[in-house]
Structures are given as C-alpha cells and as structure tokens.
Length: 253
Image 1 (cartoon, rainbow, N blue to C red):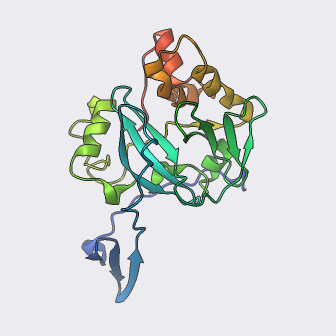
Image 2: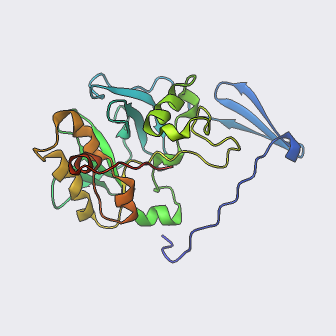
Image 3: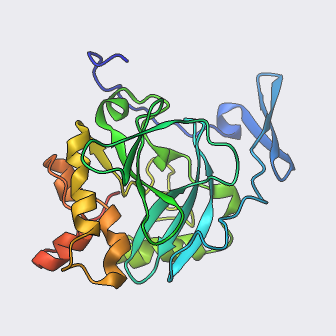
C-alpha cells in the first residue's frame, strides 16, 4: 500500500469514432472495441440470475441491481424510497472470498481480513450491510476503495435509477442521464453511503445508532448511512441520528 503517494490527477477523455475508437455490441454482455486496426473482445459479467434472497430486503427497499466489485466481493445495491438512501448488501448467495474479524467493540461489526471492508450484521434480517471502507485504500485508489465505481449499469432498466437519484437530490433534475452521469460523461453521482474509516473504533457509532431507543424502528436502516459532512470532518454521524438532532441531510455527488 503506497500511503506516501499523492492522489493521482484525473483526466477525462471521451473515446469514440472521432478519436479512432469504435465499440460494437455483439451480444448483451459481449462488446468488441477496435482502435488502429486492433480489436479486443470484452465479455462482461452476466449476473442476470443474481438476486437477493427472499428475506434479503427490508420493507420499502427496491433491488437496483447486482454489483461485481473489483475487490472480488459481490453486492446487492438497494434503494429505500421512504428514507431516500442506498445500501450495499453483501451477496452471500455464492462463496464469499473473504474472512471476517469482529470489532473489539461489538460482534455486530465485522472487518474483512483481506479487503478491510466493514459490515454490520443486521439484527432484523440475515444480511450484512457495508458500513465502512478503509480510508487509505480510497486514497491510493486500489481494488479495496469501495464499490461506488462498479454500479450495475447493465441491469438498470429505463428511467428507474434516475428517478431514485432525483428523490435523493431533486436539484439534479435535467443534469444527469439515466445512469446518474453528467451530460458529457465526465462525472457521476457518487453512491457511497458507507464511512471511510481510519480506525475500527470509529465505526462503533453505527452500532450505537442501531441500538439507540430514540431511533424509530422505521428509520433503522438510516443508521448505516454516514452523513457526508461527518465524513468531511472525519467524525461519523449516521443519518438516523442526524435526523433526531434536527440537522439537514447532505448528499454526495
């Protein structure tokens, strides 16, 4: 892990026929990309049969699509319309290439031995919710920087996903495509409800929220979403607790 390395400058360029690049869709998950006479076939993951188990979704949640993250883990991306939040649920319908250690504070919080991903064992449903990504991994932009950049585009139908985003952030109306991207493709709405943690003890705030009697039962899932401002200040505040305190919620882009 190169913790000394500065963040790489990002450069965006659209590659299309005007730059000599052609993309042909041969099948639903098979594409041919050609440049200067050389062609390469790209076979995308076919996860059409991957669905959450019947008891994997909470009331009011909608399954957005499956996520095959570069870490090797798979997730279910879900949206809660009433709470206006997204969650990444660990896909355990197949073998999970990860082992877990419990947090010293509570065995409800599990830390991946390989990825550093932190999960909360939901005490209402048999599932694990992604609540944390190790901050340094996001700094060096490695395979364990979180699933925000591996969204299930191939499984999004029509305008459903854009409508979800507009419920979260109405000000984006007219500014995003159906995948949440800007018109020129240079930016995309960032779905990262988890907290970028530096120490495991920071994640205990999620557990305190989940067990706080002041949190209404209907707001339970909002305990696993970090307020963006708390991330900026590196002091975790789950959205459910922010709601109790009467603060205005903020969103990531």
